[in-house]
Every structure is written in structure tokens, then in C-alpha cells.
Image 1 (cartoon, rainbow, N blue to C red):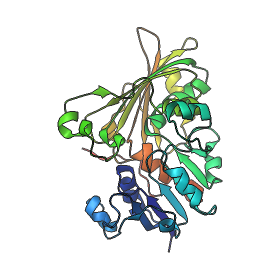
Image 2: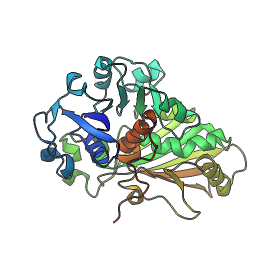
Image 3: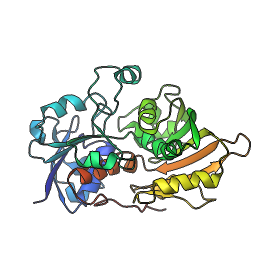
Image 4: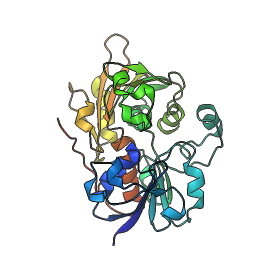
Length: 337
């Protein structure tokens, strides 16, 4: 018997991706899966791709349904994680894929999320300086937001190196439709999404305070874009240089920051990140250039929003929390074509 794990909210896209990864993990045994509307159904009825765990049955989401687990993943909507986590024993390790415990500033939570503020947990991005040992020693970890991790990985090293100004950062971040969840919403129908690009939550996206909190950005303009693809994020992060900066300088700062990181890859000069190259993986691909007209430093970042942006990141954090090799059960290789 390995480490006993459970997934609350396992019927959604992020929960399903977690189950796919957990089913192949050599040290984890899935002992419980829960759902709301799909409670009582077998996993195979909801996730037809998950043959090895198809016989598991979704239980109603409650602390009692999760009490056999050593570690619980919460893949729940905003506002649903904190109450459930509070009912779990303090000895149970928890990774929350939701937003309830990411922000350290109550005012930012009120402005972007509303509702009751809950204390911040250890932030689950191991690639940030000094964050890995904090995650390893934590029993409660707040997983990253999907747009946030793509943007933070792109800009944080440049700010830390003093190459760009933190006061004026502009992000355009295109996401696949799975980032909006599995709910049957009219604007996410295939006939509405195909051959179309549209901005959403422009000027007030919920990941803005998280990006600022984790990266050192002081002022941020962010335009999220819904792209006609199932999964993936491509973020373009532009910032004013603090002095003379070349593309080689920016690439060198990224390469130095991530030299020992298994999942972050700085591409060779002249190659741009592609979402297809990161699909199904826990990898992030980065590239830096300097705009010939404005002089701004532009870093492009590609991830799988369900991988490094959600389930893969959660599994990476869980490995650290349990003292397992950080890369266990995770792949740097994408799926193509």
C-alpha cells in the first residue's frame, strides 16, 4: 500500500487530469474521489480516457469521504475549498487547486474575488527562490493559478535581476477552453468558440494580484484571451527595461534562474514557445526578445493549463510535501501531434 491520496472535485477537467497522473504514479494509491453532480457515478462514465481507475465511484464531497487519505487534492470551485479543508485533520496534507488560500492581502482578495477572506497557505510554485523548502515542510499548500504560473515564470527572474521595471508590465495571455471548467455554458459551446478569439475579464482578472504577489510586479495590465483550443496557455509578458538590455541579457537571466529546474526550459534563440509542445506535460517553455521599436523586453511562456497550470503543478507540490522525488509521476515531454 502506497501513500493514500484522494481528489475532491475529481469530475472536472483539472480533477480528471489529476486522476490521470495519479493512476500512473508509482507511490500513490487513489482511495477516494468525490464530485457534486456526478456523485454515485463511476469515474469511467465521466472520464472515458481513464480506464485504469474507471471502476472508482464518485462519492459526495465531504470530509467523511476523504478521511482515509494521507493527502487530499481539492479541485473545487472558488470559495468551496476552505470550509472543507477546515474539517480535515491537521495531520492530513492538502493541496488546494482553487484560489481560496493564495493571496496574502485581504484587500486584494476582496477586490478581485469578494466573499470571506481565508489565511494564505504556503504558495505552491517551487521554482520561486526559497519556496521549495517551504513547500516541503508544509501540510497546506495553495496551488498556482494557471495564467499566473505562466506569467510569474516569465517575469520574476528579470525583476529579480534588475533588468526590467516592475511598475509597468503588460501581459496578454491566451488560454484553452478547459481553463473555464467543465460547466455547460453557452459561450463555451464549440460553435461559439471555434474560429474565434475573445478577451474575458479584461481589466480585472483574478490572477492579477497573485502575479504581483509572487513576481515583484508593482503595476500590471493583463488581457486574458479565450482561444479555440482545448488546453494550453501562451502568455506574452512585456516590460520596460531598467537600462540597456539585450535579448541575450534577458535570456541569460532566465537561464540562470532555471538552470537546475527540471520543468522550465529556456528555448534556443530564435525559437518561440508553442502550446502544443507542452501539452500533456508539466513543462514550461520560455523565450525572451527585445522589441525593436519600443525597446521593451518581451518574454513568451507556454504551458499546459491542466499540467503546469493545475494538476501537474499540484502533483509536483505533493511530491515535495511527502519527501518524494519532485519529478516522480510527471513528464517533461509533451504529446504531439
